[in-house]
Length: 382
Image 1 (cartoon, rainbow, N blue to C red):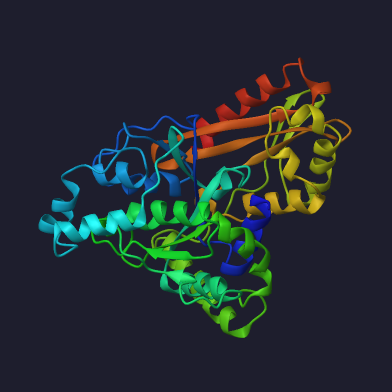
Image 2: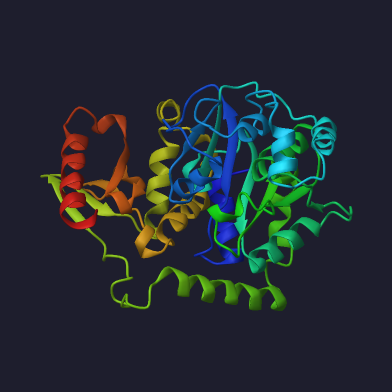
C-alpha cells in the first residue's frame, strides 16, 4: 500500500478539493513538539487539518478521559460520575463503569500518539487507522465503500463513546483484533463544537483499510452515474466554502511556474507533472544512498508512483499550495528537489525540505537554493 497512490485515488473519487483523511499511530519517538491542550484534545485537529503533525502523551492531553481512552493512564475516579451526573450521557455512574469494563481500553505501549494529514506521512507502516472528517455526502461514499465487500450488519458501527473513544479506542481495538468494522463518530456533544456542524468522523482501522485500499476502484466511487452526481455536489459545495465571495477568481489562481537561477550551471524550476519520469529516474538510480535519509524511497516503485505524488502536490487549492522545485543542471538533468511543507499561512510560517544527489553535493547548491527560496517566501509568498 502506498500513501500517494491512495491520495490520488481518493481525490479522483471524491474530487481534488476533498479534505484528506488523518492518519494516527503510536511510537516511542516524538514527531513534533506539541503544547499542552486544555480540554478536549480534538481542538488540535485544526492544526492537523492545516498540515501539521501533533504528538500527544499524558502530559500534553489535559482531559482525564482523553488520557484514559488513548491508553496513557488509568480511568480517573471522577469520570463515571462526570459522564453520568454532570454530562448526563449515561443514566448512572454504574452504567459508565459497565461500559468501560466491556470495551477493555488498551494500554498504550508507546510514548506518543501522533496525528497527521495523510499527505504528511511516508507510509502506512505504523498506522492504527485513518480518520475522515465527513459531510453527509462524503460519508455516503465512505460508508458505501465499506459495505462493498462486507455484508456484516456492523460493517459501519456507531458505538457509544466520547470523540476520543469512538475514534481512537474503538479503532485501536478493532485493528489489533484484525477486525473489519469501521466507525461513525463525533456524535458526542462535547466534541462537536470543535468541528463544523455538518461533519462527523468516519474511522477505518488499518486491519480493514488493508482490504478497502484494494476495493476502492471497484466500488461505486468510480464510473457510476449515481456517485458522479454526489461527487459533483461535493465539489460545488467545497468550491463555495473555500473561495470567499469577496475573493476574485484571479486571486485564487496558483502562481505561474517559477524559475530561479542559483549558480551558473544550476537553476530551480517549479515541478510539473511531466517531470515525473526524470525525478523517478534520479531516485531509482540512487536508492541505496537515498533510503538512508528518505523513507518514501522504497514505496516509489514506478514513474506512475511519482506522477501520483506530483498530482497530489499540484492539485491542491491555490491557498494551500506548497511549491516544489526541481534542481536542474545545464543539461536539463535533475539533481534534486527542494520545496515547502508544513506551511501555516495564517501565522506566516513554513518549512523547507530537500534532497540532492550525492554527485552534486559539497558545491553550495543547497545553501544557495535555500537562501533564494527563503528570500522569495518572505517577499512574495508567506
